[in-house]
Image (tube, rainbow, N blue to C red):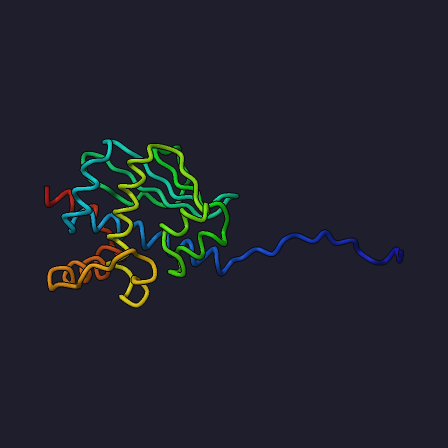
Length: 184
């Protein structure tokens, strides 16, 4: 072997595009859940059933992206992307599984059926969270994506169109956690 040759250790390539896509998806979902818990009566009813206080985390294994939600004093808020000790944690088994779900190529029921996610915490609260996620995704995704991701897409009534506009126009960019405190 030539002495002038430098030995290189090959490292796996980081999937920055997929990681960014998942981070963006988690952020959008977190803000949409926060807004839906204020604006949508079904999401509000689901969140009311949860323990108070409660911390929820969605996390991609092996140092992947994270989303944290906190329910305090009856209000659900998006609490960022720093991993914390949570009462309920949904783990995505790898980056590829999370990418399929957050890019709208696969719904959460199919991801669960294919064992792409695991759960730490109360299963009944996790099912309630998934129902809330379905409500939020119905507002986030256009119908042609939502019909592939959700079991059933609710009809877009005038009221739901107004809620969608509020979630996309105010809830996602700004967050509605402060609005929830003012409304109560």
